Image (cartoon, rainbow over all chains, first blue to last red; front, side, top):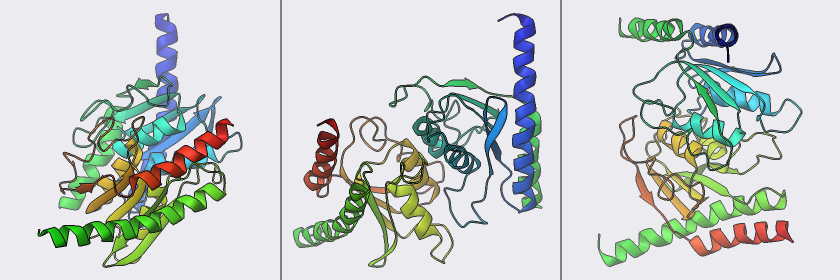
Length: 159
Length: 159
């Protein structure tokens, strides 16, 4: 990849991460931990989701699970091989597992999660996929913004 | 625990695993990989589920996720601290993560899954819970029966 191509790829990632951030803000408005995700195929969002654990009273209602569920029901079978998942926070163990099962092609995350992130922080759960597809991973896209909405949320909760 | 108490606990596990097996058979009737799960609190099933990945076109629609989702919406908040999850097959990475997030107290599984099981086979994902609750794990309850329904399914699919 040339420098120009790398820069273009980075800008594309930032653009879609902004869509995921919109979802994070929807979570924030509901008083949920602000994490958002979108699944993109061929330049179109085919699934979106934000954290709704409290609203749905369901601990599995993470942004990624809802976005993958929406994208998988999009009409071309449930495999998401040719898609990119953008998520504002490093996926947890559950969401890493969902990414593997869904055969997501590329995962782009924003802020790292030192406590529960399963991609690079507490484990490397996207390596050594038992379902035999290599997943491309990009971390740190718009990380400051993605992280700030979370720290603001937890700061406000403590106050 | 006395020998009598151990035996009684074993019988209780077998009884609830039979309920999870009923769910596995519901999956089988739909042509789904036959895995079933129930969540039990105070001697009552408060959530049940069977694998519905194909029917729902959703790779996250595993038995455990559906059972946990049902139990969490049961009316006393989404935390499942005082529950036992019975599942016919060793949970995968995603379902181990869901078990941690849901604060399930005890997990009892039937057959091990050497390819994708995250409890003892390919990892020990229920150890070192980032959400700070120790999970009790029992494996191998009615393992022969739980495994046979799966091997029969895959054998029939190959034929």
